Image (cartoon, rainbow, N blue to C red; front, side, top):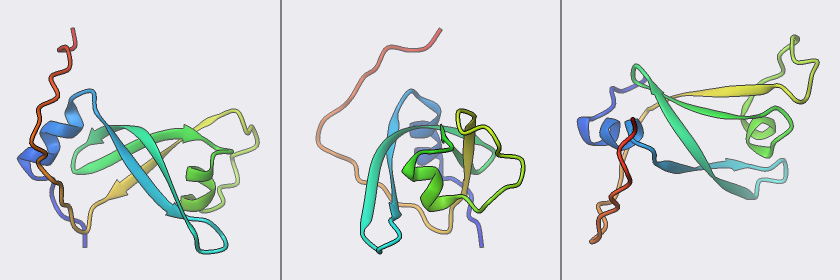
Length: 96
């Protein structure tokens, strides 16, 4: 069952930060890549190319994907969330 994003996690995702998306290759070995993330409601959005390992390892076949140059968006509903507060602060410039 999906959970709501906490205020702390939402604050991280709404700023210009990136995350690491880990998935499994067909042989069961892990593949991890840094990704830019967005938020829609309580879902996390990751944009990628259809031919990327991220898309191949996570998206079910979809009949309207005839153009491999098109982008796809992975929509992630959380079942659990955790993060670690590191002993340093990253202070990116504000948008706008």
